[in-house]
Image 1 (spheres, one colour):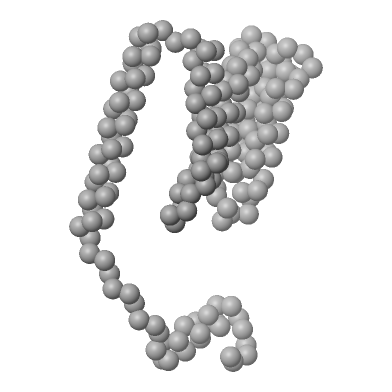
Image 2 (tube, rainbow, N blue to C red; image 1 turned 90 degrees about the vertical axis):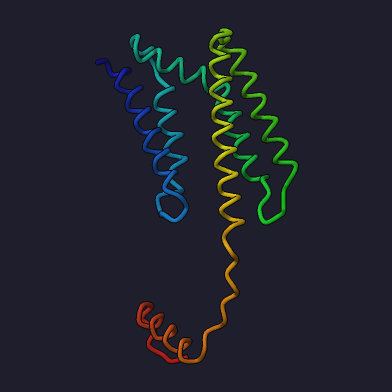
Length: 179
C-alpha cells in the first residue's frame, strides 16, 4: 500500500470518527469536536500531492462526485429540521429553502447518475413501500395516543416533600448551608 493510499483510508477513518463524535449528541462534551474532525478527515482524504493508486482513486472520485448532491441535501435537511413546526410555531422561510435544496439535490443526483428505467421503477416501488410503512406507523401512534387517557395535572409538593427534595439535592450538590 502506498503512502497516498494510506492517506485516503486514514482520512476516511477520521471522517467516520468525526461523524461518530458528532452523533453522540449535545449532552456529551465531545459533541462540538465532531464536525471539525469530520471535515479534517475529508480534507486528509481529498487534499493530496499525488494521485492515489486505482482502488483508492475510485474512492476519492466517488466522494467528489457524490459531494455535488450530498452537500445541498444535507444543508436542505438541516434547514427543514430547523424550520419544522415546533410547539405550533413554524419558520416557513428555512422550511421552504430547505425543501428547495433537497429538490435541487435530487435533480443533481438524477442528472449525474442517469439511472435506467428499471432502476427508477425499483426505487419508486421501494419508496411506495417505505411511505406505506411510515403511514401505518403514524396511524398506529396517533391511535395509541388518542386511546390513552390524559393524566390529571399533578399537585405541588407539600412542605415535608419539599424538605426531603431539598435535603437530597443538598447532599448530592454538597451544599452545607441551610436555605
